[in-house]
Amino acid sequence: MDDIVTDVVKGVVYGSLEWIKDQAKKYAEDHKKGNIKIVTDKETFKVIKEQKKLPELHLFTKYITDPVLCQLYHAGVALRYFETNVEKRDELRTKIRNMYGVKGLRIAEFIQNGYFMKYLTVVMAREKTENAIKKDLKLFFENFDKHVTVVQETDKNEKNAREIVMRINSNLPRTYIIFGSGKAAKKSSDIKKIVLAEISNYVVEEYVYVMKRAYFFNKEE
Image (cartoon, rainbow, N blue to C red; front, side):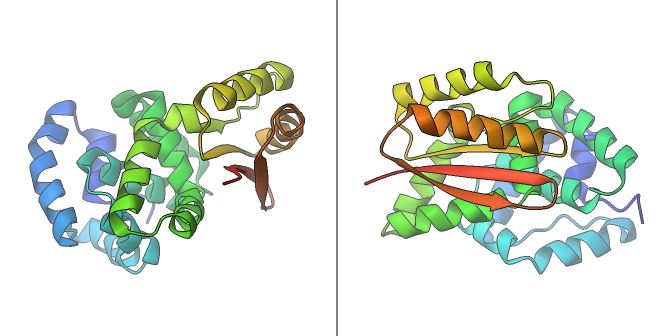
């Protein structure tokens, strides 16, 4: 069971940049058609079958066709699947970071924790057309580092909060997201309080789980 991963995630774990280039065109076309043709052996079948049941997958591929983001989506779902298997999860995190960089890993974590669906809900509430939703999501992921802070256990609350306030005041994002897991969950809550006291015209939606915290700062419009 621990070795069951999707073909996309195998590309993350075992593949190379050449693999990405070779697969990019095929994945772009498959995702455009809403057809995820990535089952290549019996080992991958179960996870692929389960992923196809997720409403999240259908919504993601409806609005996003970028092949790398689609691969990071599957990587994020795999992280979620292996969340209680620390060794497998950490191995996968390392491989994602090595291939896609820190930004790619953060996007995968964003998807892992279910925050894509929450952000999509925000976007769908403020945009009136499908094209507008697609444009919002495209800009969001292109500028992910300007819109999202993933709090780490070693972060300094005051320093991190100052950086976030500067980003918000400089970029005026319609939504800014702070989230942290495990030992960083409490830090994310503390940072949220500092940021909220320093900015105006934003309202916060909170998502609290056992060892996870997420805060969506939505600009008043």
